Image (cartoon, rainbow, N blue to C red; front, side, top):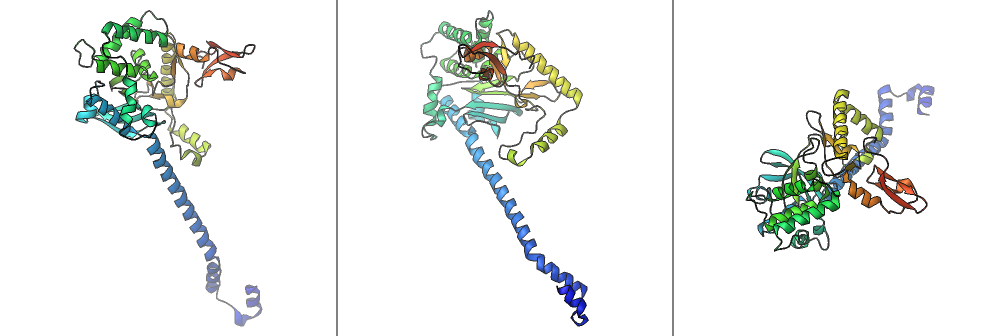
Length: 372
């Protein structure tokens, strides 16, 4: 309308630059609102990400609680281990970056005498009840109640043998595994196992991954056990702890489209010959554990987060939480109620058939790991 009036009446004509300035000023409030909204949105998303990071960190990462409990027991003479002095007295074993995915299963990267390591500890009992720092060590005492005072070495060997039979089945080579565990428990290498040493190694054997680390210690594709203190244990650090994957924090995953995430993984993956080398190593590992010296083992979750590789692109299991003994899988599946075959699954990949007549799972895994 303004332009029509100006054209009709030359006395009312407006200079071009004045007209442009007028239009810009008329749009300025809308532009201000737009940028203010974007700034507010950016601040909101950033604040939410920071809040989620610190709230999840404080919930998941309780390494200080774990170290406090372990060192309290060590100073009181309840536990022992090859890492205790470095952790609790000399400070040469240090927890650094939290990698935990569960508040009861603490995982940290750290440094031990200048070498990068992974440190793992369970604090299940410490998180119950009031959760106070003073009461946590008292609750954890139940973990170290076996063997009791007065147990002889012969009785302790029999305890170990019975426990291994229940976990691994009747294997002819279990005697050598018992001897290895006793040698591991003898921290000061005096040919004797003290009560604190026996309590520590017994508590560790209740952790599935530690049992597997001891049982599969000869396998080149597993991380090496470096030391322990109570039920805290230290392993070598695998250079790449996940298979070709960019691990995003949980609070950022909803913000990154799956297509972008997949493209990033593709760009970051090693070259094809190196991926082939890693895969061959994984096949070798599966073959080795399927009929091992101490029974058969199954890889029941073959997701990339459990499989890693070192700087030479040799396959290394980032953790053994996904590996299960044949006895454990059979015990879980046998007699389990089911409607479909999918109900008879241990972990993610170990599946048996469902007997639909009696509505119970069969104990035999139908698809071997090598086929998977």
